[in-house]
Image (tube, rainbow over the protein chains, first blue to last red):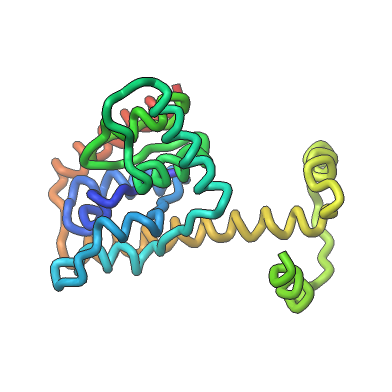
Length: 130
Length: 92
């Protein structure tokens, strides 16, 4: 599974190297996923959304089910219990939950720190910049 | 719950004969429980189709982009190495 965070969805259109990383993974059977909730952070409602809109039009978005949302809550709570100062936000937690449900794959994000904390117990998921 | 049941009842269905591995059938029956094997396989098939359709859509989109905005060979090579590293990290 390839999960795209809000900060990288547009780069699936604009960044040539990232496009080919995605192509390579998809050709090997990995499935791209854009959590619907990331649009809340990625969209601006301006013409600058064009690359974002093109990517979303091509592969669609995936809604969080109640099961996904509850998993997101558990992941956030786990980080909270670990004693860090800053608890990841709900959108990051839902992105992480989509990845955790898939059990294996990659999350692309411009800011890996929070997602790595959320997915600390999912060794078969790697979190990386595009 | 009620609405999904209505949708299922209205969906056209067709009986088909397929050959599956015996072990997979036994595991599917155990997992399916009271839902029944047909419902279980129908859900699994729908999920597989959705995944395949997403992959095809992504590749088609990337092909379209490439036609209008080609990528240099060196960039493709770097991307391939990155993808390999990611696969290694996930499958190790």
